[in-house]
Structures are given as structure tokens and as C-alpha cells.
Length: 250
Image 1: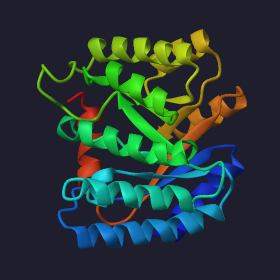
Image 2: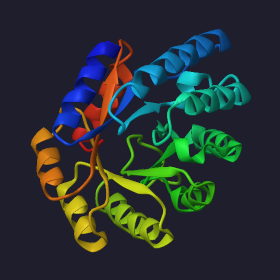
Image 3: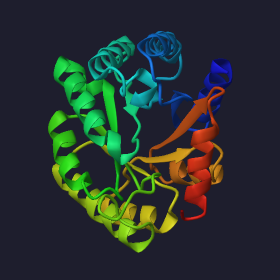
Image 4: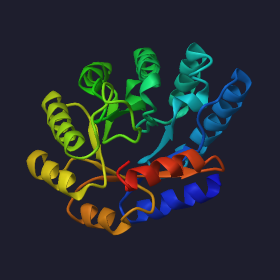
């Protein structure tokens, strides 16, 4: 599977598109499994270092045992980030609201170890807490992916999908631009993307592998940096279900 992801990364680079490779998996419940996952990511980091320079890694921290050993999870994340060659990052994915505090704390812990330049974080626009979290992520100095959000949460925790989340996305993108933080617009919403590119200039855009690939080529032709998320592995079901729910506005 890793070979197929590497091949996809090379093909994307030939089109002028970067990539971020992820090994499917989440919700690890024991430290032994988390250790095996971390070891596989260290090997994957070595493989990524041999790929084009704009190839990054992605991971969900619950795959590294965040739920059972937060300190060990931070140690694993730091080791993987340190293994990457200069200029590459490991992008930490957003998870459900109940894990948001732990995910943010882990990112901050690793960033303080001199690894902020090797880290990326994901900010869901639909979470009501995200404006405050962005302040901490900007202060940590990590790269930020702004997404609409893939988790349906109670109204007290998250905005409804549709106009409320879209407006939050616009406001958060402008706030990030004002801070001069490094960030990317991770959305396939053409109206949002084009409105922000017109207002903010050619900000990096992130897409999912296989979703509107011609748009990536169009953006590159316009001078907009593009990165595509390239997942691989067997534990794909929960990811697929979230993408399906998003596509139906759930």
C-alpha cells in the first residue's frame, strides 16, 4: 500500500501538486498497538524523505494512542516529526470534539520541543471553540489547515453545516491571514475557495485524492499551490463514512 501512495505522490508532483500521505487508522486502545503504529510511521517518514520535497505526512493522534497514553502519543509524534527531513511536516488531523483539548495539547507539547516547523494542525470551522484554538496554534508556530469539519456535534459545541459554518470559515481564514500564520484552505467548496483567493491572494489549497482532480490542475496553472491528501491502508471504513456524510450535508 505504501508503494501505491508513493507512486501517487510522484504522479501528483509531475503535475505540480504536493501531497500528504496518511496511513488509515484511529481509535487505538492499547499502548502496544500505538507503539507499532509509531514504528510504521517512522518507516513511512524515511520513505517520504526519499520522495519529492513537498511530500508530507498526515496522522490522526488517536492512531498513536492519544486516548490511552497522551504523553506517549506526544513522544511518538515528536519522534516522527524529528525523523522528517527539513521542509517537511506531519499534519495532525482533526478528530471529534471530545478529543480537541488533548489534540491541541499534544501539538503544543511537540511544537515546544523545537519541532513547530515540522508540524501541521487542522482547525475545523464548525467547532465553536476554534477561534480560541487558532490563537494557540498561531502562537505555537505550526502550519494550519482550515477545514469545514467532518464531525456532527451538538449545537452547543458546533455550528450547523451550511451557511453558519461557511461564514465561520470565511471569518477564520481572514483572521489567519491577519496573523500572517502559515495556513491552507482545505476545502472543495468552490465558492468559498474562490472568494478567499480573490480576497487573500494565492493561498495554498488542499484537496482529497480523487475529488475533482481537474481543479487541482486549474489552480496550479493559476499559480495557486495545491496539496492532495493521499491515504492508504486497510482501516478505511470510518474515513469513508465521514466523507459520505459530508457529501450529503450530514
